[in-house]
Image (cartoon, rainbow, N blue to C red; front, side, top):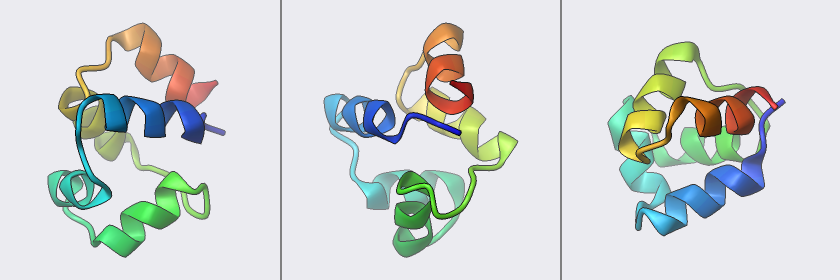
Amino acid sequence: MFDRFELLKERELNKKSQTDMAKAIGISTKQYGHKELGYSEFKRNEIEIISKELNLNPEKMQRIFFG
């Protein structure tokens, strides 16, 4: 389970839209929205890309995606 509110906060702090994040990981905006809402899970490679896009340190990445 991941912390969707923390992910949203980090995305907004970095001025990234759902569309920006979807493009970065190679999926549609709708698919990204479903992942951000918790309807489907992020894959490991998507988590790595998102972490780079949002400048997350390993601790923050762990807290957001792995609780």
